[in-house]
Length: 207
Ligand code: NI
Image (cartoon, rainbow, N blue to C red):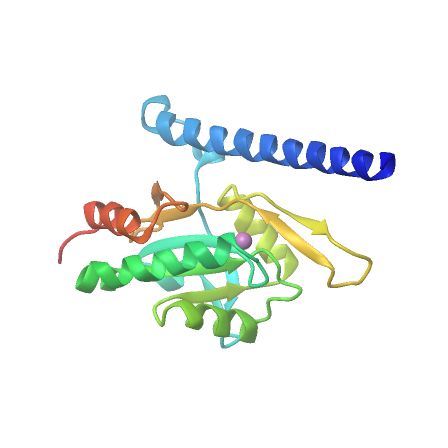
């Protein structure tokens, strides 16, 4: 039917546009990562920075809370149907493969959906993947600020008329941060556990 084909073609255009935005964002990220050392870009484009959030017990935390540990930072949301659970499953398996070396690393899951992802929800969600993983949430303003620091894109994608009928479009990027809180590298978030483990193995000190 004409209506059906029109709707489906519009859906395809929207999907294609979204993919184009993701590619553009990903391309920009790669450009930045590749060019940062030589270009000597200033703090305006640095990845990471100070943040204030809330952990799974409702306790206030900041970037300072984790100083001295390497951080593996991932942004997502607990209602995510596919990418977040896949990535976090791979991260959890990679940490297991790393053995004691993983003790130097604190993986953080920061929600981009603070309305639904309360402290209790992120705590339970993170624990389901790994006891090592800490889930963090915050006020919408705090989440906006930390996502901005990490150059993470996220947006509400409505799926129906109800208040909870929405998904979140979001960047899927794993950031490795040093014990001083400074950005070290992007770890391939779409890779399997072996690749993630090998990447971390290369970058984390052995003792
Ligand atoms: Ni997701």
